[in-house]
Length: 179
Image (cartoon, rainbow, N blue to C red; front, top):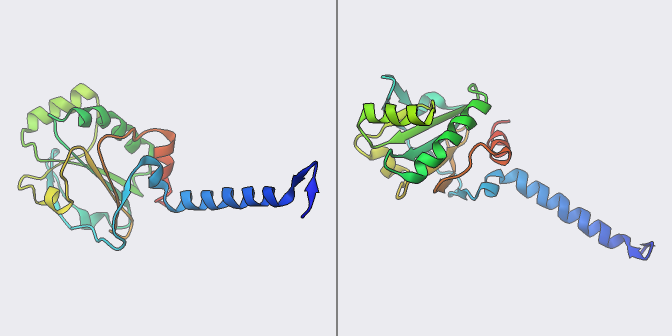
């Protein structure tokens, strides 16, 4: 054992090894920092096609090759209202060629949703899950629920409850999914 100023080099090596291992784990599971639960490996995202507030039709299959974040919400949900501006800011910070944020609601009052977004000064795509099929397929039991889908179309994580999606840590976590 080599000592240096009364301390062992072995202790320094152990500290360095622990630090490197922790860095690797964080790189492999960047979503853990945001308390986003992992799902079973290989869980394929259920395909869907939903109508959007702007009149378009959005199909998940058309987004393959991009990281997709689905945020399930409602206008009557207080925590949804709290996190919606942060989702809008997250969307603005990421490359639209590699990242897509889709908000999904079962609310059908289009004018009410437009007013809700205008009051919050938020511009995000809103999709309508009129039959609740998509919400059921993605196991939405509470709002807000946010689901992460990787570039291959695999569900990699889900968060129940609001998050501060525009913090530097959150932005880095999402960016780590987009090599």
